Each structure stands twice: as C-alpha cells, then as structure tokens.
Length: 80
Ligand SMILES: [Zn+2]
Ligand SMILES: [Zn+2]
Image (cartoon, rainbow, N blue to C red; front, side, top):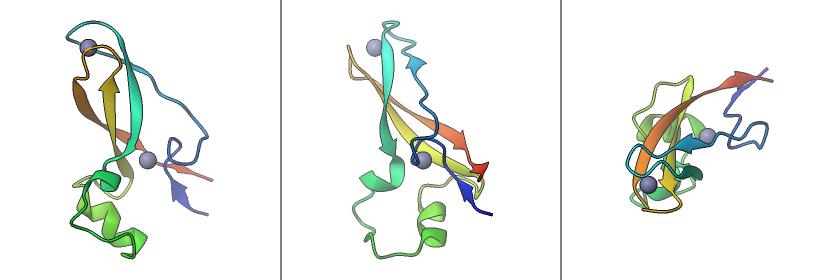
C-alpha cells in the first residue's frame, strides 16, 4: 500500500475560500512543481521533503480566481 495525495491523484478535489475577497481558491498543484531549483529526477522521497511538508502531507498551492492571492494548504495523504 502507498500513501498518496488525493489531489495529485485526482481522487479528491478541494476548493477553498479566499479570506480576502471570498471567491473560490483553486488548486494550482503541489508546491514541489514550483520549486525549480530541484529537478524532476529526484526521488519521490526527496521531493516530499523539499516542500517542507511532513511525509504524510502534500503541500499544495491554492490561488484565488478573483484576486490571485495564493496560499499553501497541507493535504493529508491517503492510503490506497
Ligand atoms: Zn498533492
Ligand atoms: Zn481573493
């Protein structure tokens, strides 16, 4: 069994509310995608540490569709 992020794997969708303007915040993907210092060739174990999230969490970037405010949300990995 594997611990996977339900958002990265399309199992679940999370929509948050912007605390500035109240609009929808959309998942922009895992934060590791935005850390271009790190190559995509790193193993999964290392990339999980790169975003600063604990191993059982996947850090995602959410962006407000109206005011473009972004925030990080830790997504709990689930067992599949
Ligand atoms: Zn994820
Ligand atoms: Zn907003």
